[in-house]
Image 1 (cartoon, rainbow, N blue to C red):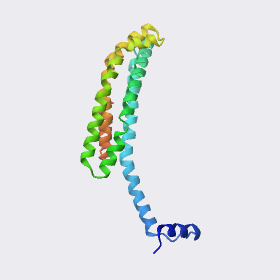
Image 2: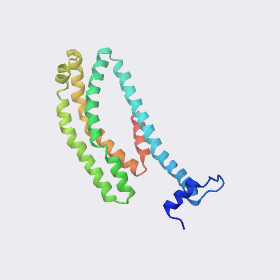
Image 3: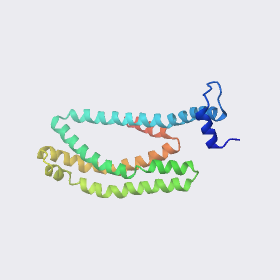
Image 4: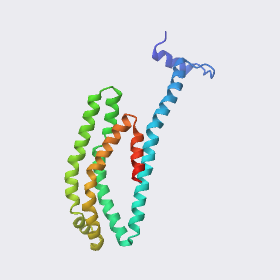
Length: 195
């Protein structure tokens, strides 16, 4: 019986025979198809969900555009500020999918629950200062040199939309749980309902 090192050395020095498939190669090929199917079953609903989110955002832009160019400019200023704060929160919770998948893969349901719970706590605790900062959105925009009229319109939007940060971050954490449990299609159908 060859050792691993001996098997590797023999594989490197012996000419390859395309008709000779070892059990290991057959197992990898058969398992590879299963892995691809499993990856697609998780990735496809998540990709479609992202496309749904793009459709929702596009609809928002079209609807605000009907109100005029000033409203559209103010809406985009507000969206950029909220998105910036949301991006920091997404970064803080970005380890949840990997930690949840690792815990689920090792069969540790308690660690899955603990990771999700801690991710939700991070989302809530981050949201408090983020919402407080965004309540001064108009002042921040004027300080950054934006038009005072557009900043005033954007400030009202920011103050209202800032309250979406906790549920959006919570949804990101729970989406990681659903993807880990191979239930990503639930998020897709919820997004379809929002469109």
